[in-house]
Length: 536
Image (cartoon, rainbow, N blue to C red; front, side):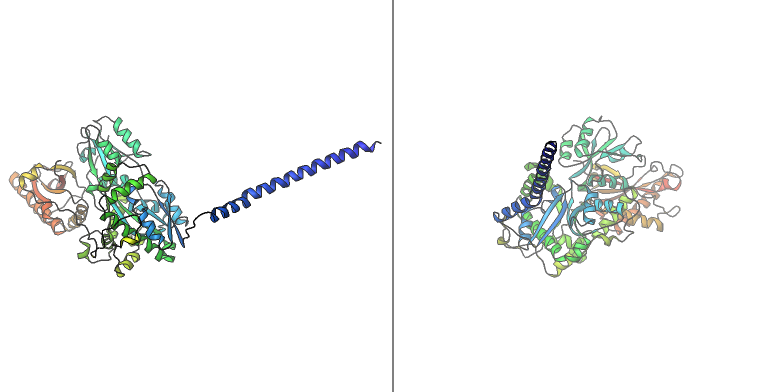
């Protein structure tokens, strides 16, 4: 009788253990079903009830919402690549260039877009360049600008004061615009801590609005904030990217292993891009409409007038211009277009001299970061971007054209009369080491000849400004003799610049009876170089 309660308790315990065991087994089963079986069944059901488009090649491309990349993202490019069973998946990293570089390095993306300066800066931090440039996409021509209040900063030279500052978004093309300014223009009193960082352009714009107009502060913005800034009373442009050549340039890069193993896929993408670029440019408002549609998917939706402003501020490179940049065609066909090697060299120089990077990470071998094989292959195949109407589903073409688009020449400045020269307004004074002459004569010394060659190269990057070469005199001695010597030295210097490729219509040589600011000794009889523009 005494054993009955004990047996009953054991049976109850056994039942509890059995129930718990079944609950555990059921839980494990449900977990396995939820994690493994159900997704497979759902996936199979999805596959069985969907139209399947299968691609032989899927390429991941890192990008951001900049409208200059709209052609690359366009339906036209996707349609052309679909015919070759290639699909591009775009990975938006919000312009995080370090992340973009790491994904290339780790093989998580096969291609990416960069500005040249951003690629150099990001790669210099790691010491590796995991991708090669295969195409020049565009150059911004006004989409980035440095603005200020006219009262506080009427011209660039007024930033040469210890209280001056420049607010911008770091690691952006706008930062490079500011660095070009402080590297190429004479701003001896600009403080070392001139850069005031902001997280986004809206913050820069808000700071501009809250700044006193009398303060020596500049603000670097890009569209649409440039247009918004210029709508404020007394705000004007000090410098924008339309005045530069070869500094703010967007490129397409391919990860080196992927490029080496799959050159045909890279070529197909480059070819599709160049065809689409040609076709959109041929259509009335083709690029404007593309940017409006692209902005609905990437970034903030653009209004029609904003899209038109952006199109005027972006210069998309055509097929022949890419051939020219990569050195594929003759100098005559290139029409004095800048080589990619030279672009990289001068960008590295600006970044190095303004301490954005530590020394030259390429050690002068600028060809390391671009690959001309894709464009050379297209050139040898007589590639032409014009295609028949049937090859694109979303655009209407006007027929085929047998001539390749030409390399666009820079608009030449017209020669001015003396009265017109007097109407020009100053932009900035070029930064250059004092030009040295023989004692009491206008013979330029050899080391200064090299300085003038470098100056001529810099002036070619600012093709829209006139140049006044100013010979200076000392206060001591015969005033007439000093004035004559100053004019002779200005004339000799101007001739040297013309010999090195600067059009004589851009240059005026003159003399003044005062030394340059802060000049001592022989520097008081040197020459300076002032950039000028027409008043608007």
